[in-house]
Length: 456
Ligand SMILES: [Ca+2]
Ligand SMILES: [Ca+2]
Ligand SMILES: [Ca+2]
Image (cartoon, rainbow, N blue to C red; front, side):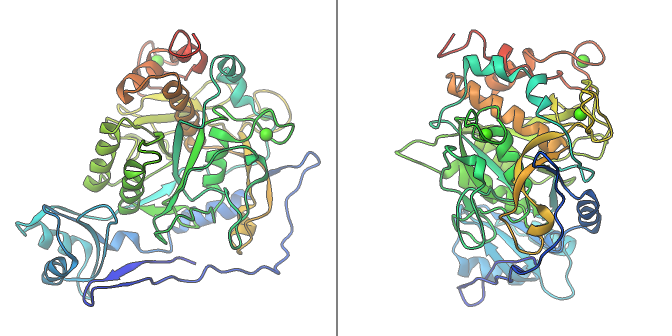
């Protein structure tokens, strides 16, 4: 199922090595259904997939950044000297992802690149993964919106298509294209031209389920007499596919996706003011950090999920100091048992806990939005849309990204100011003041927006 794209440096040719996406259109699997059309994701299948790790061998590669703008022929010599077999150049500069030749490993290759004076940095590529909690099940209505006071928020600001959030994820069900279908409750949602780092084209279609759920938390069509509501529903979404069909990706892929967002222009301006990263890994990447620093310098607020391993520190990219790191609370405003923590944690949002039913509706508490059936997606069907309760810091981060977009719409331009407002107005939880379990506390969007900008 996995696909890889490498430029073969030797011949100077771009060779697109596209593996096939397994489409078994005729397969008729039993679907989980409920009377009200709300469904649960088969937690077992997701857990098995997460345990197994990625099919794609992201971790065997090396990221190398040359100091100067170089041409591929020049780079080819260095890649060969270092022991690289194949390399793929970034669309945005002299950054290459190099596969080692037989007998070499990523560590050896990295150390050879580091000894070259022309190299700015080299590092083994790292694996990142979607931060969904693999124990999702069927829940009741959108309690997360009540907890953060969404209705009071909408009295002040509902977003505007002139402000966009880039969702770097497994893609989004935003268009009808090939086997992919637009999710039904994206009715009036505006989508900007996206990017797929695997195919290097604009078709950032979701083949997993995760990215569509995350984008729906931010801007699912609202007040349209159908489906679910969302926090910043008039905000535009830019779909950027950096995770594969299993929810895995690489540090180099994240850097590539961020570079696409930073370089995007429409009518001479970049409407993207927020990047959401509901994903992470444990390896610190210079390539990713440099891309994030460029984004923040360009006025883009970067939000990332803390991770679902109940460990400290939080994952990268959340652990970077210029990224808003978001943890997850349950229906009681307690830290969700999976939510990672530590000194880099900034704020919390309701990401849910499927083992609890604190609103007493007979269903476990998760975040309800539209996406498609992940089990059917695994066999190549991306059109089985329904409303799913999903839990995780993946579901918490986009609530903060949505709030950042609303603040940007109010006219707050500096990402540091946006982060400061979100933190200052958060509801303090746990130990008094900022602490490592809750950061600054639970976001309060209406309080953050009050008195600021357009509609004060
Ligand atoms: Ca709706
Ligand atoms: Ca419940
Ligand atoms: Ca506290």
